[in-house]
Length: 406
Image 1 (cartoon, rainbow, N blue to C red):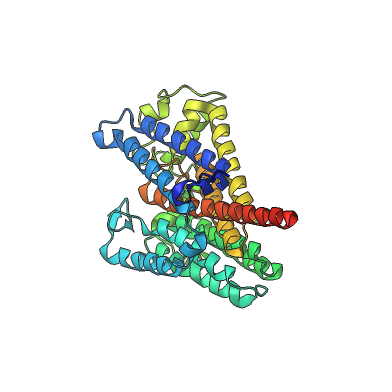
Image 2 (spheres, rainbow, N blue to C red):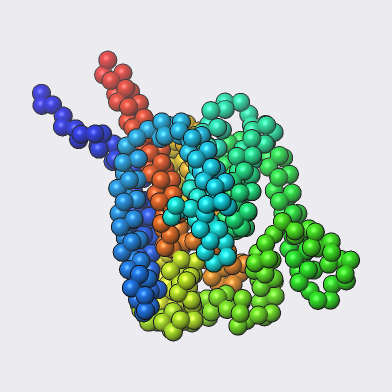
């Protein structure tokens, strides 16, 4: 009887990877490289023109790294999540003292953006914590999970970066819901968050309205004292879009013009007037507003293709989570899917003028080394969940066949 050939290093297990998620990720990366090139093709800076090459190299590293991580038992990696979480929090704490300031915010240290690492580290830590709990989720689980998110949120708010800090809330809520936390506890948390958001928006609107009485203005200022001036300005520009169209409202207005002028099929690759003429500033065209560049050049059809890719990606990740043999794997997939959804939803929403401007990049598409590397780690772990599920099912099937033969 011939000996069955097996690939070395367990490479044969990659057949159990979720190839729908992998294909959608590669498609999004390819779109990102193309439109980072398009966004900077007509810039005077050679550094900006070469950004797409940096993105392509990092995408290749992320793909290779993701395949390597898929071959490792994700549970072994999650055991190290507390250390990764502590390291991410330590970096965030060091940012105010040793960080680099760009565009009015101190978010970078040693050439990386710790807030992006903290998102994935927090998801891993919560998945590891809740995955080890066999009992029904109670208020203590909710409190500890919330604490794991609140610590990096506070540090990120100090940078200041309100948009990035807020993304932790829906991610943790989704993971708690998937873990079986009592619905009443989650509903109470959601209501508190919605009420707080409503109060803050009302306070910002009252503070920015010249007709607000002095007493009400003072109360509004106290309610928003934790926010930076630029954060209040962004919310005011969203609430009152015509207050400064040639200044702070410029990016939002030009983005909306770019998206609307794309029509059904766009103006053609490298033919977007808003981008070529510099109406979409070079500082944001390849990252925060890359969707506007794509929508102008490829129109509704190109935008729909991008959203379909995200839909396939999210459904595939959730399917991998549903088939996970352990709670930690399922919660990890839910956290990663929610993170990607929030980023895509907010980025597209702000590009079309439906949401306030934030610095949240478009996953796998926007230029951003730290965020792309963090997503590469996250999706490597997701593939690890899919591979482990497939290997376990294969072993169970093999045992069943042996039992029937005997």
